[in-house]
Amino acid sequence: MFWDRLDSFNIMENLGMLSTMPLLAPILTVLLLVAYGLFRRFSRGKGQLGSRTDHALTSPAEYGFERRTLGIGAIAVIVLYFVEFVVRGYVFNFYNTVDWWRYATPLIAAGLTLGVLLLQIASRKTVAPARPVVATARRTWLSFGPRAGIAGTGVLVAAFVATTLAAGAASSPDDRGRYIYIELAAANTTIDPLRFWFYGWAYGIPVIICVGVLAIMAWLTLRANALRPFRVPENAGTERRARGEIAAGITSISSAAMLLALGGAFRLINNARGPWGLTIDGDPRSEPYEMTWHYANLAAAAGWLAPLLEVAAFMLLLIAARRLLPAHQRRQPSENTVTAEVV
Image (tube, rainbow, N blue to C red; front, side, top):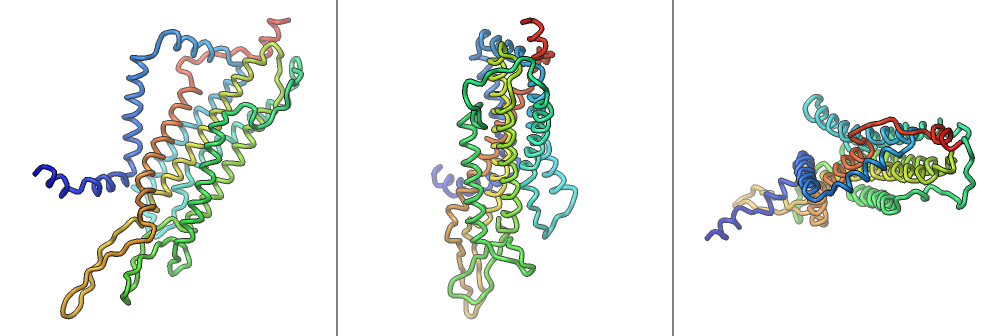
């Protein structure tokens, strides 16, 4: 009897509705962070904590500014994401507006963060090295990795291209020529099709442009981070570690911003999941119709993936901020200081 009641409650349908809640991802992120913190508290040894602190304290001061820029930028992406959500949902009325910026906001915030970092690196690039380091290998934008993070960012760019092309091709225009609808027609009837807001060309084109700009900014920043000269031969190992941390921060912020944008796009695509019931009044009886998109299963899968992508994005940003913004800030030794000690 219990299972009959459980089936009548339709668990999957209610869970599907729960997955469309915008605040589901932040709630899950908080729960995961609490669980992660408890796990770390009970499993972390003193040696691991000490080694992390010692490593952070040996980073040169010049890289400390860049680490803080990335750490603050990671927090800024989260803050701007929620500010846009509150302003759009509770302050202004954007009815019948193609609010593509709701998906582009994290991309723009991440791009601005990388732009500031690029300016910092470029401004220090003109300073003459205290003691030039002879390069043992040709450095490229891939030199300091992380390779997995760079590959993941590339996969997300490809996913955005595929999503934009597929959703755009399935979308339909409104009376103003904006491709913002998905049309579901009732077979063998003369009634107008049902129209739902959808991630059509009007959304996909501006967002994919922002994705492309962010990818270019990430490439430029990784390249500038790798190609600038080392300043002190005796400190090259420390500089390599610092550059590796900066490269990891670049890829984390870029990937997280794309995950947030892609999760939002998947939520809008989920509008076409169906099936939708429709009753046509007639004489002598009314006819019920069930209207379903051909790719309704893919739309439903996108709805399930959306909160998972957003949780992954929040986790990446928070972990990056924690790694780049140490709890105990100290002034790091600069390259000039190391030179003076060596001489």
